[in-house]
Length: 296
Image 1: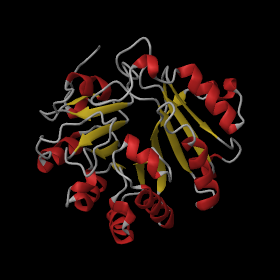
Image 2: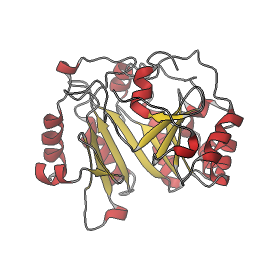
Image 3: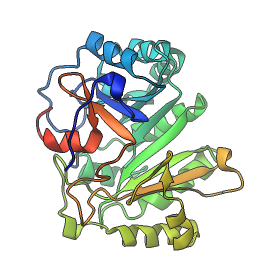
Image 4: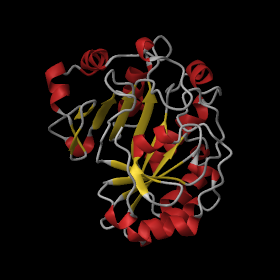
């Protein structure tokens, strides 16, 4: 594993993850950062790091659950003031409140990722996330669409548990949300932090490609050809549009293998995503998570 750290001025990553809190209002079975005892990130040191980044960067506000921080709207506004693009990764529970969703929009948030492992199926959430929360999650999705957020969905695929969910999520976006554009991200169970499946029990990369070819009506060759993700070619990532002739107004499907057979981490040596370290430097995301498993 090629682990390294650089000063913020030397960062070449297109996006940088900031785990601004380790607190969370859920206990998901597959959480890759399950330690809840780490103090909240020092926000002034965080602003200093962001101000020193050499190019405009996507700042991914994560945790834990970033909405547990009461100052999240102020953090979003400050990131924008510093010339970067704030984005949020969230379980979506607090976004079931329309006023809270509005507050984040007014602070300058335009894009986020919401975890929807069960779509609208409470039985799946109870198994995978240990909480029956489908109604709140779907309410959050509708609130986000009302404000025209760019919505990224993150869905972990667990064999025999949520096999029906990808098709249901597509249906929700097309019918319930009036064909709202967005990215639906699907991945297998990773091997970091707290997880429920070993590699041999998981979906393989080839199985995922075959599955989504059937769901979307695309050929496997078409799906595999879209391996340039956000300007980076990665072995176990594809991102493809359902309608290649209308890319701005269609749904995109992203498939990621989080448990590759030839590596202990997804996307080794990826240049796409970094993470702010404990000493406020920048390290490659997955390598840093693996180095600090159950710790930071």
